[in-house]
Length: 138
Image 1 (cartoon, rainbow, N blue to C red):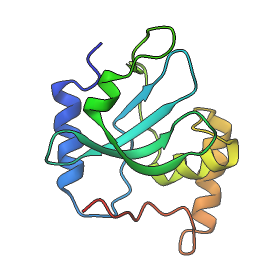
Image 2: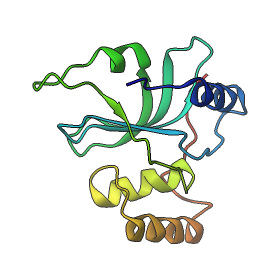
Image 3: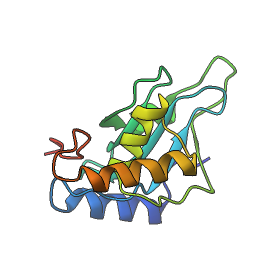
Image 4: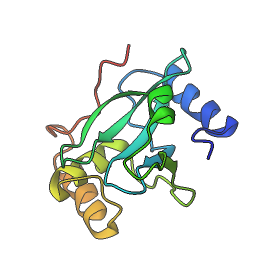
């Protein structure tokens, strides 16, 4: 499966070229079909390989960071399966909401109830939230 289509690449590069610290909606969700590793990607750097987003290697330690597209494409798990793209995923919330929800849930979640609660919590604490998407991507 192609992890990053031309349309997705274009959107990721546009986000990556934008102002640093922008709280984008995730563009693509990548995951290990035989495990719990998950990546919600919002940006691609001009090198065409470095992706930025919410990364959870499957140990319940979600954090903002970068990952290599080439490395993701080369992964083969114990069952021989490769990383896949969630074809049905549509980012509904800014990345900061997914980050806050992941910290509450102990991993990246798609549970609408948890995401809504994180969105409410985020609006209540918007000026002092420790879960900011301010990052050092440049």
